[in-house]
Amino acid sequence: MRLIVNATAESDAGVVFGGTIHFESEERDAAVGTLPGFNGARFFARSGGFEVGVGNIYGALEFMPGQYPIDLGLTGHSYDYVAYNFRGDAYQNGQGLGSSGSNGIEVLYSAGDLAVHVSATNPAGANNERIAGHIAYTWNGWTFALGAQDSDFVGDTEWTATVGGSFGPADVTLAFADNGVAGDHWVLAGRFDVGAATNIEAYVADADYFAQTSYGVDFNHDMGGGTSLRGGISNNNADVTIVDFGVRFNF
Image (cartoon, rainbow, N blue to C red; front, side, top):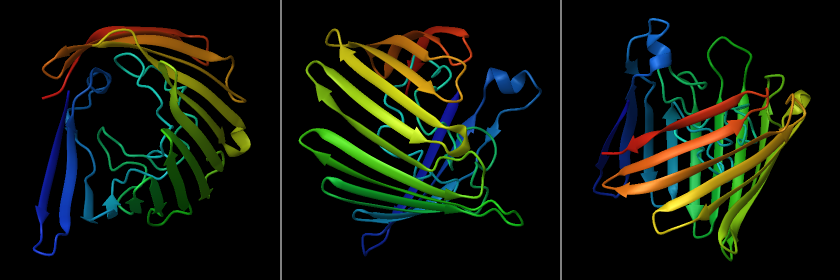
């Protein structure tokens, strides 16, 4: 159960100031005695296509188009289809301040078909700086994105590229990441409509640090009113089969 609280105010000059915080409870947290709680807040100021965020930031690689080409099943399974493999700063939904601690800062800019995102973190008292950025451009229905990172963490992503768009009846994405000493990571994913309210998603992913190729398929059926019936099956990089089924609802 995740409650998302957004607070914004707009100045007379048209600058929007805001903050976002999540309250979350998960069975896996309760199993180890962790009570429901809040995550770290993200604060921002936005004017036109320019935005500055601080705190529990999105992270330039995490927010890059094509890194989440699908949302498999009800729970995301092992997220083997995320090419950068969380080897960089990322927004933390659950409890805690996020990988950025309290010192994350990011700048986002968009103008027409062009988008740019730069983020940086340096938690106090630790030699673990991360500076990352991506640039994305949409042309003729296809989005091309390129990201890079300079990090003090061994095994972090060095660079990543994605391309995604429509190919006949399917939305397809091809993603690649050079994850430093961990090696390369490839992903091919697609989404297909099989009715007015139902789609099927599938992926295949491989990486130098996988024990075996990972693959999966799911279905999503929109029941209206913010509810959807969802389920999926995958065989992850450790040869573990995951199955889930349930209802997701937004309100």
